Amino acid sequence: MISKTMQDAINEQINKELFSSYLYLSMAAHFENKNLAGFANWLRVQAREEREHAMKFYDHLLERGGRVLLKAIDAPATGWKSNLEAFKEVQAHEGKVTASINSLYELSLKEKDYPAQVLLQWFITEQVEEEKNAAGIVSQLEMIEAHGTAALMLDHQLGKRSGE
Ligand code: FEO
Image (cartoon, rainbow, N blue to C red; front, top):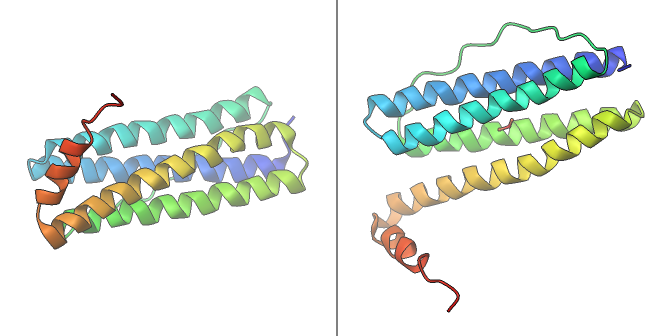
């Protein structure tokens, strides 16, 4: 059975993952209103992934005889001055989530909670991907601000090259 300390910490993380989902849903609506359907789509998919992250922790607690105690989810922001500002927020937010996952992992080491360590290793790998994706979009948006879209179009073109 999972310890009360780990249970409480995982319940906190469930709340953070659900807040992430809320934040990205709010951003998706913002971009939909601006007729940027591709940005909105990316964020909708991201919001769904965050809910799946919450459910991984939720199921982990239940499988180990723990209690799921859902807390209130804070309201996310509703508007962003620019596309770049919105995706910088995604990047900063993912950095915070990484720090939180790392703290949970440290706690699982202290508690000698081996099953939680296995679960958290998945999340540690996932956060590398999450941060990389957000940083990639931020850097493309910065490139658009600095050089317009030409460099991106060329990059898209060069990306089509296959091995042979
Ligand atoms: Fe669940 Fe984007 O971290």
